Length: 392
Ligand code: GLU
Image 1 (cartoon, protein in one colour):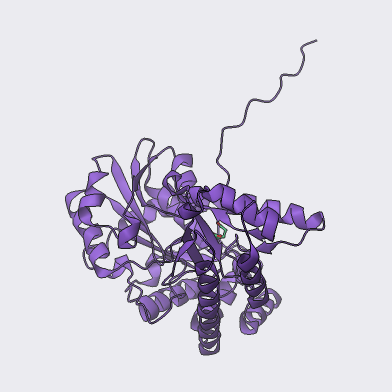
Image 2 (tube, helix red, strand yellow):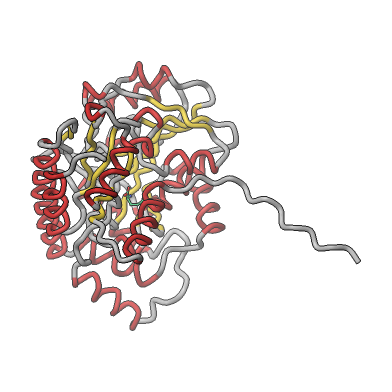
């Protein structure tokens, strides 16, 4: 009798730092500990009622079946209109894909264009999942590391220095996670210049496009004439519309990538949930909902100020005030401790969960990221705890 062989070894797949910290927070809470979670960028607000009602109605109306893989025509049209109205991205609905989350939108865009051995430029510090997505697709990350002293602004020389004939894409994120900075005109022009010299795509993650403060303008790379036919613009409703659990987003894709994107989406997820697509139309079009978003952004701005003021008074912390998104990026090098040690101490001593900087690139081990997405009460409690925290 032959013995059954043990199953083979699974491939190494990097974890998401944000999800892993979330798992740790959940375990601590299950063990009875109180944790102020300033790690996961998850809006505290309830989804606006009109969106919930639209989903309920859609379920009653029978939107429980498959939809076309690219999405319901009316949902694609709503996303196309919102992109034009809000961000000046002039795109026909035939180029819009409604997908289950912006996160999937980034992955699907990369999957549609990358082949093993390709290189992808990312700008540090960058969101935790870009690098795992790229390596899962057997491509290689090339990191641009702009100077913190210039607010992490980059130019075309820095881009071109890491580009080669294997470069297939530049990943952008504006407003950015973790720094909260918004790309300026010079940077978009720098991307256009780099692309002029090299045939590559732009994958622009704009999940935070509506969360901006102090009148800062959002510039969508696809609105730049030279980048329009090579840019994937990715958006989603998780953050701006307080819909993280709904998993809904969209891609405005370059026409020349549509065949590949169709294939990837059809074979990997099929389509986004039908009733959620219907709800997304209300989310993107209803004027009452747009007013609610304005109120949420206003409140995030207030929490940002409160958190930045509290961080300013912590010895050794140097927070930078974000222009948008949901995060404060703080240099903690003057504490003499690594970001990881500071994060451990904040959790153990003050009960505050944050994300260590190295999750956003190995060069950022002396930083931490904190979010002001949690409720006003949680942010205020964290500010009070920060005021009396000393590292241990
Ligand atoms: N994007 C959020 C964050 O950076 C949520 C978790 C995730 O998907 O990474 O905290």
